[in-house]
Amino acid sequence: MDKKILLYTLFQRKDFESEERRNGIEALRKLADVEFHEQKVMTAEHGEGVVAVIAGSEKFTPEFYEAAKDLLIIARWGVGFDQVNVDVATEYGVLVTVAPAHMVTVAEYTVAQWLATMKRTYMLNEMSHAGDFSIIRTYEIDGSTLGLYGLGRIGQAVAERARPLLGENGRLLVYDIRPDIEEIAARYDAEVVGDPMILFEACDTVSLHIAGDNSIVGYEQLCAMQPHASLINPSRGNLVDDEAVKRAIAENRLCYYVVDDPVSGPRAIHKDNPRVICTNHNGGSTVESCIRLDMTTFDQVTATLEGRRPQHVLNEAVLEHPRVQQLFGS
Image 1 (cartoon, helix red, strand yellow):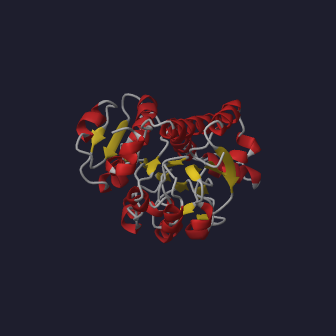
Image 2 (cartoon, rainbow, N blue to C red; image 1 turned 45 degrees about the horizontal axis):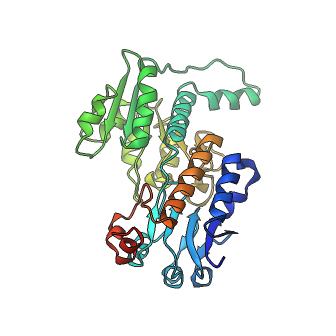
Image 3 (cartoon, one colour; image 1 turned 90 degrees about the vertical axis):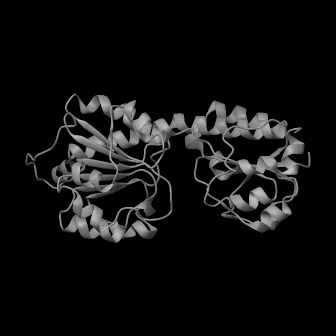
């Protein structure tokens, strides 16, 4: 079989192996040869004979697309697509799909960090290990105020789980620019605010649930927070100014900053700071979510190679490309 399906090396990790993964890979082998790769950057030399890629975090260059004459789909094992080079993929008639299969996982992560920071779990653990057995002041979730910056799929999953914990007197404040925000918020008995600064001023905890590359939280927003409050960022590290966080925490402007990124690169500034909780971009990874991600991407590749439109096409403009229309019999 001359055609190849490339799978990023994450599919060879033993700690996330499952029967579903093994069966899924075997099913793909009936469509084309399956090869695993460890490339950080996909260039022209990697494109020959490739009909599909289930991608991790590798970068796809224009040269790869030009060389991969048979390529039909890149299925992202997750929802991030920064490295895929979507515009070039569309130009060459290549479908790019995402796998929104981890909303529950990230929502649970968010709620767990919300509870942990309000209960000062990290602080109490550090104190106890240091021989300080003092009793300190912590806070109840019931009756508190939680702010969600972004009410997309994950934000809604958080709202669904958070609303009962807040109790009758608790408040759920939300900010989003989506046109149907009032309708969506009403489902969760949430209050819509027109200015995100209100979240930082009024909430005991603010959690970020948006995409984007630009910083939306700086020193001004952090200074608006109450000293006992915490900021949770399960989305992208670059949404928050790390220098501003370091300064604001040193000045006791807020209690905790939680970010689902490792203490490396821009986040290295937080090394050894017990009030900055970094979790290695692991918030969306559970045994269950990895199985869902596997099955979603396997189904997307299978559908495409069998001439059926896959779910969760990111670059819908590609559906007008002659190559794709011929594939789907349009």
